[in-house]
Length: 186
Image (cartoon, rainbow, N blue to C red; front, side):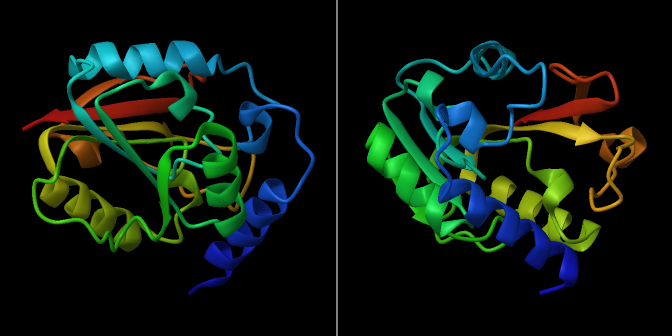
C-alpha cells in the first residue's frame, strides 16, 4: 500500500473514532457546502433508481449518504473499520469492511453500484480502474461515481480528466464546480 493510501486510511479511522455530531461530519462534509440529501436525490434521479432496486455503496463511510438511500436492499462497503462500525451502530445497515478494487460480491449481484466522494482518496489511477472494473462486474443496471476532482487544494488528492471517461455520461459536480460525476447505464 502506498503512502497516500496509508495517510487517508489513518484520517478516516480517526474520523470514525471521533465524537462527531452528524453522519455528514463523520464522512468529512463538515467543511463543505454539500447537501448530502440533495446528492442522494440527485443520484437516485440520475440512475432512475426505484425503491425495489438493490444498491451497493462503495466507500459508504458512516452512512452520510446511506441515511437518504431507502431501497429494497442496501449494502455498504468501506475500508475504515471505525466508520463501518459507526455506520452499523447508527443506521443498522449491512456494511462490510473492504477495498473498492477487490469486492467480495458475485457478478451482477446488485442493480446499482454507487460511489460518491471517494475516488480522490484512492492511491492511484490503476486502483481507480480496478475499482471501476469491479463496479462493472457487480452492477446489473448502472453505476454512479461522483465528486471526481479536476483540481484540488490538496496535493494528496488524486485528480481526474473528463476525457478519460468518454464512454460515460459526464455531469457537473453536485456542489463543487471543480469536480464532476460519471454514470453508466448497463
